[in-house]
Image (cartoon, rainbow, N blue to C red; front, side, top):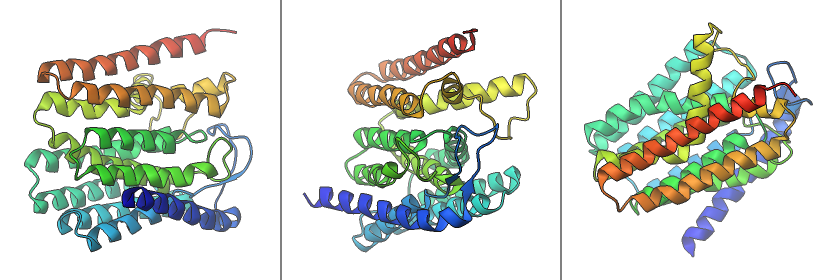
Length: 325
């Protein structure tokens, strides 16, 4: 019961902090519509600060109760502040993508150091260096319509909780709760957007959770199950990035050619597309724990099979959406 109350309090704190951010952002951080945007009315951004505030409060409670080793919490908090901080600045004044990438890399180093001094094995340290910039940018790329990035983060966090060791599950659920507190402000109608402060923070926290969950699995085959809750975003982001690079586009610039954006431009509502992505990811979250008790090779086949299905679905849907009406 105390755990449920704690998660509810965390969601409430995220909601309150988002509401306060909304009051600030209405006058200082307004995202205008444009050809590289999926919204049609001016909307405040930066609401993800509410999620960051709630998560930092959760870190403080975890430190007070000695729930996790101090080096791990310190590396997590410092990395989160780096990513959220550069995102908050970028929300006010656009920064070079290479500067943002450099800060994300530094955040990965800080998180990896926290893992190292906690005593996690070297695979966790190396994975952190890669996972942080990858997931931070994936969530940034995919934060383009109402509710999508926050709902996918909440679903992925819940999926990680089901795969994680019992000690790590509360941290995963804390992220889901923080997202739940933010979502009423962003879905189905967006009163405020996550902003780079929020999308970057979500990607960082998911990386910080996914790495120890994966390393905590008993073998590589089962570690691959961690990819399944992320499949919708990983496939759309990576396939779209690859397509843009192959045709010679400046892939680091904002655009509206992801599958979810193409779907909206074809006439579907934000709520519909977000719900379809959510349903797909929920199925992945349900299926992935069922493979934990299988042989390693079967778990690997299941994970790669799910990614293959995701990729095939992306290709088919994109082809259908590109057909003339």
